[in-house]
Amino acid sequence: MRLSSDTRWLLRVCPGVLAALLAGQPAAEEAAVQVYECHQGGKVTFSDEPCVGTEQTVKIDYSRPDAAQGEDAAFAAQAAEAQAGAVAQAAVLDSEILNLEQQITNQQTERDARVAALRQQLAQGTEDPNPSAWQAAMNQQIDATYNNYNDTILAQRRRLDQLQAQRQSLGSQGQR
Image (cartoon, rainbow, N blue to C red; front, side, top):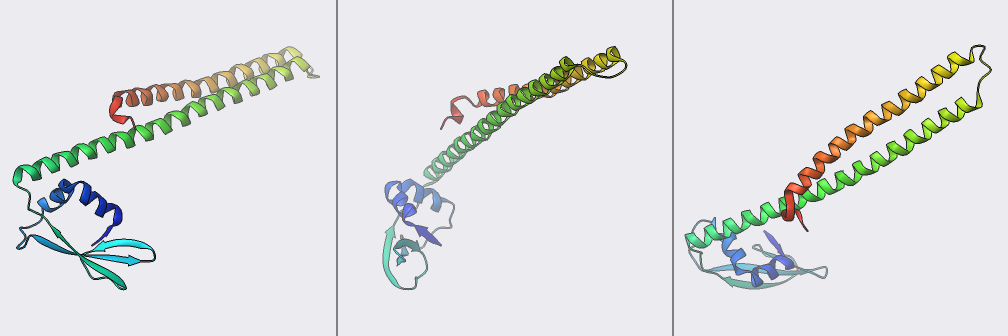
């Protein structure tokens, strides 16, 4: 098992982390663990196995945590995991909300452009032998285009409302 220099720092600064890690391990017969500090390619890693190259043996003394400390560490880990999950869920929701808002804007722009093009075509008139039937067909096409886009936009807005409600329900838990 190799430990990074960040993990080593964490173990120094937060001895409770080591206690939490060891709480689930079977009882140790000795109160010291042999760890190898390896220097390879400008990086420092830690391992319970000897490394190739320049190495230094480090002894880490620890006391096995009692049951209450183990439970406290497990509870703290669960709370941190729940908070991380809320932050991750909030980030996903934020991304989905932004994406959906952009889709709605794009649909509105596309709808307006297509309706404007149809109205321009209607204003230019036709050489159709039955101009009133052509105008009625063009007006139907304008209405259908507008309504089809609006149906899509309304469905997207309903989904957006759902996402925003989910995001709001996370409240301050989802704050980064």
